[in-house]
Image (cartoon, rainbow, N blue to C red; front, side):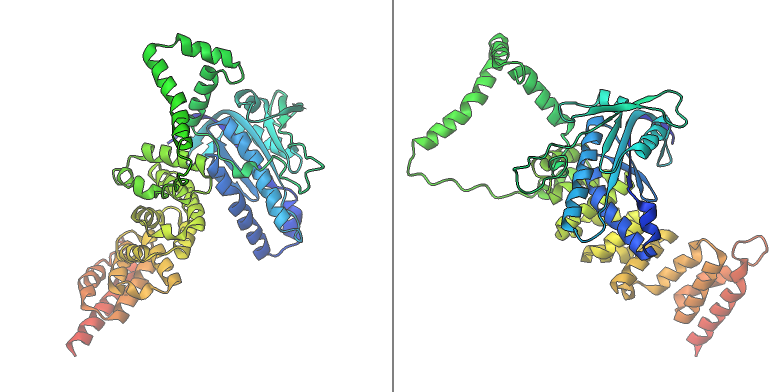
Length: 463
């Protein structure tokens, strides 16, 4: 279904990619792109970006928030910088990031429109290690969170009017600080504010006079209704009372911190009842407090799957399981990933192969013995990778292949395997296939083989 949205469109690409590919083997090029995706895609997801597609070495990503997009660009450069610091002997990975904001058309998982073209053109003029913004992004983003400076009006190919372009300047380095720091101060370790966080900070800034003077905040308190003033007073005084109570007990031991609760256990009821908005809000809040919270990332994978954001779903699961492999036994994860085999095969097969719990193996066996050719075939392939293919009932598998394999030669191959298995449960299906021999029937290529297989099984069982 086609729809229009106002989104920030981001392009990234690897500097010098063409030259590097000419000097590397195909395996080395593939490894470089895998490393690139492993490094960048979790950060895109962390700032609520959605990958649309990869175009060679380029990523096309969209964001609902221009501020999140700009901060994500800074975080990507910081992550690449840190990556290069840890691999000083290798050719450094360098990227450029560019973005544009505007009305785009979303169709079939892709994105179209002039903002896409402008972002691509700006990306072509962006220097290595830089983040460039079109004027539309600059005007719409929160400038308190993202510093920017004007570069130039750019004449872009195919765009009728010049586009003002700005850049995000790197953080000034202190020459006396000792160790070098990331160009944007470690943005890759930060988390984008959720909508609720932004509203709360905006409320506090406006009401308590942050940036406008303490007296304005106090004037608001004096003018507020009595009941509301009482609530504010309680919020202000409660911490002081708690501190005073502790101060009056000099011999009291420092209280132990409460045991860390499991976010998955806390939100299990919401997951089971599919209250995804609640789950998403709570997981985002947990990530804002701890960007490394694996359970929160895992729950956001559930949310993405429920919203049919398929690539984001698998990416979030993969990021979470890299941090905590024990999460792989969760029933919702198992269901979502086994279902995903039908529509996102390669990353899902890789994820299941690397993080296969007993529950996942059981679900894969069930999938390999059920209808739906592609999901069944891919489930069997994962089981074969794990060395668990013997758990699949081969007769059930081949009967399904005989029924729904996408071509007559594939169904004929199923007939041959059923004949080799020699199980009488296959006879009704084989006899039915042997009668479908007219030139108009899709099974006409296998009718003779089906008759021979049925006869072979019949003769074998009667001996």
